[in-house]
Image (cartoon, rainbow, N blue to C red):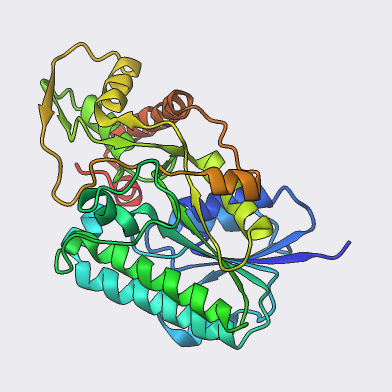
Length: 342
């Protein structure tokens, strides 16, 4: 049986580490995992201790430095390009670093791929690339892949992440069009699950309920999202790189559009909250609706998300409640690892 070589750039992140875990069950797969593990050295230790080093080799390096690519092979069957600085707190506090780091990651990876013998490459993008299309031009929802990419205000730090993902989409598709490799772009839509850190809406809600807020403010109560559980997102990602048509974009997400009010009150129900809810305005630059049209992924990839949002949220809440309880010793490393605000 011939082995399949896989490179996961950003393999220490939330989605990357779950892709590794999913694919590792296939015994003919061999992995190189690249990350600078800036978010958590615990993840680096976990990978080294739980995966056979003969099948999964880890590179702790910074790919914003082009010479870091010299550590890698030049002939992978599949390359997952997942690495990026992401998060509302990051784009608002260090927008210049988001621009620099994500752009360098994209350009360095493309230039390395151009001279390599890698076969198929997947670039992970985001629904943020078309957020302005929804707000300004009232594009259709659920939203298909051919929606024009638009942001609202070029100088606003909120959109720096989206701008770098637009660069990535254009870069990978155009390099592929020149025959250097086959490329597929996917746009994630509100992926969630255990171990994603606390700087996301669901774990942040758990943290706030845990602090006994009352009244409990629902920020952006009337906004809607379609939340995509990590297991479904991973399956969609793997299907995209293995079955996707080169040069194509696929929306990976869920079809169930719910309001932030629905989400918040359900989390409150799971946590036995008996207080009062109060509607509150959302953060500037946040899109009012987000729900992907996934019919292209359904028909071409056979992608069919199976985890209902209530089931996924329940599992997610259980994990974060347990994790918060384990932090009762006020361990500083715990707070650093999960991004909890003390």
